[in-house]
Image 1: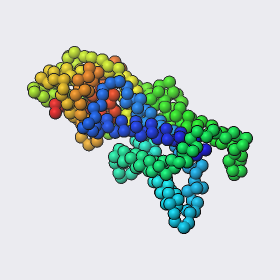
Image 2: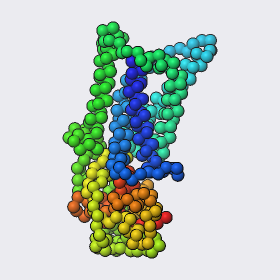
Image 3: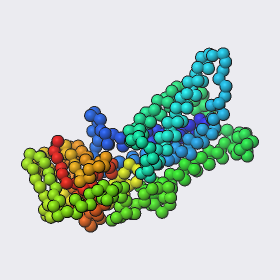
Image 4: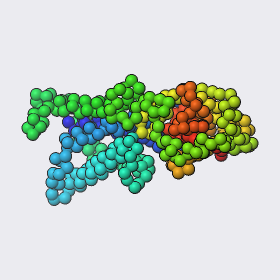
Length: 365
């Protein structure tokens, strides 16, 4: 029973870990890695899977612990021997694994709610804990490998011949499996609506719902929270493009330039996403106007000063992509102030935190 539940939990943790790596590398890209700009909705899918697999792992983790916790408190063999050392190593790896996994899921869930009641930085801690989990899991698997191999192909006992202790009321193992699987599926279905519009009406566990917010899009950080209202609404606002030639545009001058359209999602690290039709100037066209080529790396500077994402960088493959826009309109309307008025970046396959709002400067690096 523990083996089967372990397989399910292992799949959820593996999906969560790999998609989490992709998200982290999007924001802190290693020198050896090039993030592609296509498929345009790739981040929407991977981050949605990341949050869903993390949520589904909760009932799986609880069920797994319930099946094995009596063994965790059994006495170690005495006198000390190789077997005793192996069991001690196993229990230590389990203690670290359970503590790290429980904390990882807990702070990840609170992140989806944008609630941070702790003094440490979330993203760096979340990333470090993931590697602690992997290390503890590898040790645990190494110790249990002989037992895993022995039980991997063993058929599941029938409900008539195998039942849980009487304290459970005679629930069969098969019934337990169905209950745990049903709980995991229920969690997934009631949370997936924040990125799957068809499930939005039953998304009771989703902190964001498609179509809710100004201009039909959710908002994580408002202009008031960012402290940019006065500057964004000022008639003195200008966009400056710094390159071989420095150019300055007023909002009316930007609107007079050739406009392009792109149907792209906003996909946030909290797991929610929402597609919209964006209109504005291709970033590559602005770069060409100032004398830059298609291999330029661009720093995007927001009016926001105090947030963690007041600046972002567009690598060459994103800056040159025809879908990357300095957006002025969304869904047929001028940008709402909370969506980045007067101008924001929208690009394919990018986390929402890097789709910088209230842009006033583009700098070639």
